[in-house]
Amino acid sequence: MEDLKKFFERDKFAALCGIELLEVSEGYAKASMKITENHYNGVRTVQGGAIFTLADLTFAAASNSHGTVAVAINVNISFTKAALEGTLYAEAKETTRNPKISTYTITVTDDSGDIISIFEGMAYRKKQKLEEFAD
Image 1 (spheres, rainbow, N blue to C red):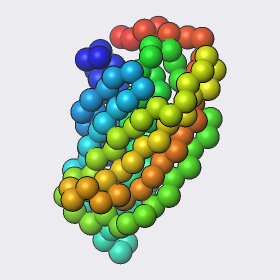
Image 2: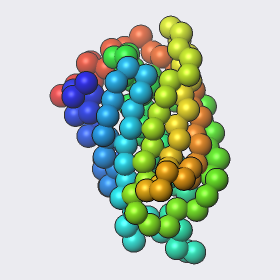
Image 3: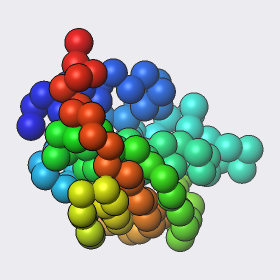
């Protein structure tokens, strides 16, 4: 699904955050974000919004992987450990899918494999095809 990876390169905010989409297949996606000084909050841990953005892009890629436009209608994130340095990885797995609604669990881990956050997302599947938005 190289085309889907290329499609998500258009996400300018994720690119600004340094997020790279590594893999996409039906109902699955994996992305990474190398931590830089720009990701830190006031107490020198990775800002929650940066972690959320990593998880959210991965959710978007997995939920749109079937070729139909899918948009978030509900998300929840739990932060389980502070991220300090290295690279973060997000892995999205589809848990349910029907013609209108699909759900995903996205786990964000650090270089050691420790869980940093768990993000759960619900997407609404629209009638539009993703290819309608291709350049």
